[in-house]
Image (tube, rainbow, N blue to C red; front, side):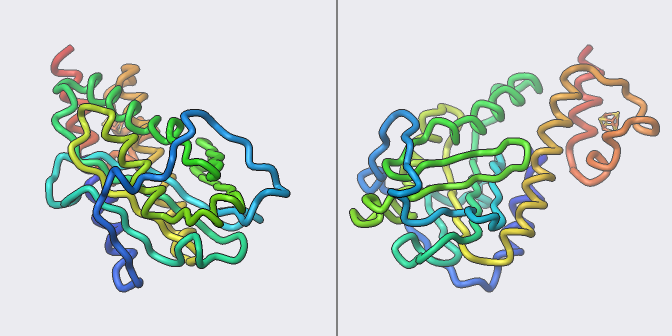
Length: 238
Ligand code: SF4
C-alpha cells in the first residue's frame, strides 16, 4: 500500500527540527479505557485540545514499508497534558504498518476503513474525544480528575496502540501528538489530502469511468503515486 508513503514521509519532514519526546509502547502504561464514550461536562473540564476554535487535525495512514513505522511508539511534539494550562491547537496522527491487507483492492479498502474506525472505539477515561469526519478535526476535553491523576500522552497513545493492535492486519503503530503549534494548521491540509485519497478509493471501487482526461479526481491521481495503478488494475481484473 504505497498510496500514503509520501504523506508519512512529508509529515515527518514538516515536523523535523521541532523538539520531540518519544516513548516505546508499553501496554501496561495504557490509560484506562472505559469501553464507551463518556461525557466530560464543561464545569469538570481542565481544558480542550483543539478547543476555542484552535486548529485541530487528525489522520490515519497505512503502509507496508517497514522503515516508515520502525516500532510501536508514541511521539510528542509540543507540551504534554500536565504542562498545558488552557485550550491549544492539537493534532493526532496514526501511522500503521500492516500486512498486505488481504490482497485485492476491495479487501484493502475495507481494511483501511476498519483501521480508520479504530479512533471511534478508544475511550481513555477523562479524555472525551469529539471527531468531525467532515473537517478532519479531533477535539478532546480533558477532565480535571484525569489531569490530577496524571494522564499524559504516553498513556493515551498506548491506549490507542492497544486499540489498533486488535486488528490482525496491524503489525506496528506510531502515534504522533502535536500540541500548541502553528504546524497543526499545515497538518489540517494534509488531513484533507488523506481524506481525498480515501474518497477517491471509494469512487474507484464504485466503478467510475476510466478516462483520466475527463475524470474530476485527476488532480488527486496526479499527485498520489499508486492511485492509477489501483484503478486500472481493477479494470483489468473486471
Ligand atoms: S485513475 Fe484516472 S479515471 Fe481513475 S480515478 Fe484517477 S483520474 Fe479518475
